[in-house]
Amino acid sequence: MLHGFRRHVEMESTWCRSLAALHSLPSDAMLDNGLSTNLIHYLPVTTTVVAAAFFRVLWRHRQRNPFARYVMWWMIGVGLYGLGTLTEALTSIIGWNEPIFRTHNVKMHLF
Image (cartoon, rainbow, N blue to C red):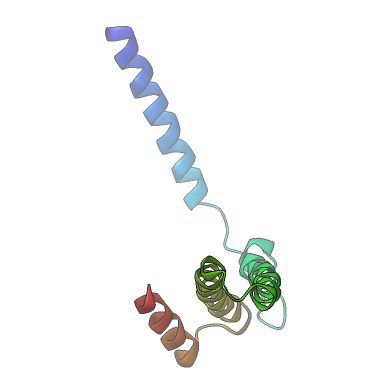
């Protein structure tokens, strides 16, 4: 029993050291125009494009089959998701902006 506890404490201290090392990393490098060089910040742009493409596929399916109500619900969900990723994408490209922040909050209250 003591061996298992000791292993747990060692794992926890390793995790704490890893977390401390993560916090000591330098901040992202910025380009001259103020954009980040870290590509993870631009992931919302990609998800917005994917959501728009999926919404278009759903729209065409809904046009062919207007009685498929489940497609309408999918369209509402994908549309709201796309709106959320669009506001995140604009925030990562432009920076904090009050109208974008308000749009994001209104969208969150719709859920």
